[in-house]
Image (cartoon, rainbow, N blue to C red; front, side):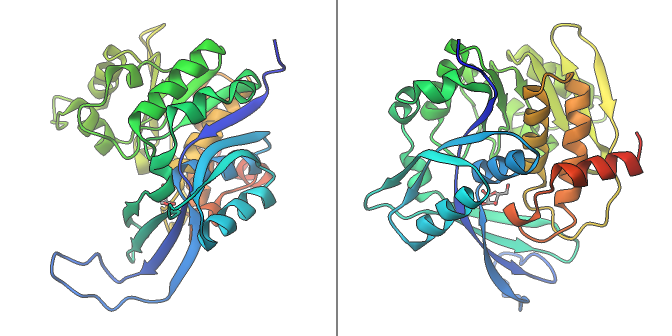
Length: 312
Ligand code: RIB
């Protein structure tokens, strides 16, 4: 068997078009915002950059369009030491683009035009046997067509890779095969959509995590934002809370991606899930302290420093 050490990210690459605004516009409202900037994003690419900065050997399977954004986005990933040999250029397609508004509290709202990301096919996944053979962990999100994500899960299982699914953006009626992964890591609002159930005083975090385990995941990591995370594993039926790290929040864009990537890197290193989630919480917190997505991803040293400063 090949030396299984890489983190293989199969996911989206977007150019983020970002504006800061004093508040989120209501329907029909025009708001005068602040500076506009473009910066590399996309949940898949953000996770790949974070994993690489955290010290992992990273490869990506993805597509960009045949345009200037595509060249810039791929070039940026190469600079971050990501193996881009499985990133294809799609003739006649535009690269993915995300329109992002960030409000004065650092919260964001995002609309994505998927472009080439929606041209990543199951064949793109099935044709990359070597990438899966070398992968310790396969990291997935849902900005690609669901049949492609399902193909990636099938392929990862055949190659005995651990599978981490960040189910964002969460679809209604997600196919059952997509729940059958090693770790699924929704935030609370994504979990509500996946389960088609609003949490109530009675339906608290543990119940949500248990419901997700019942759908077939081996472990659930429920991201609770400023409350940290809840970890639940099917094997022992235990729940563990992992506390948050306190940081000054500038922009939350990409914080979930930093979390997922850090958790995957720690899993690839063979760490226990609760320790991997702690590492993820620290990386996610640090990603909130700078503006932008990929440009805000922390290094391993920065994460270790925060963990040492704030022992949980
Ligand atoms: O998770 C943040 C990302 O979501 C942004 O970078 C944007 O591109 C969208 O994919």
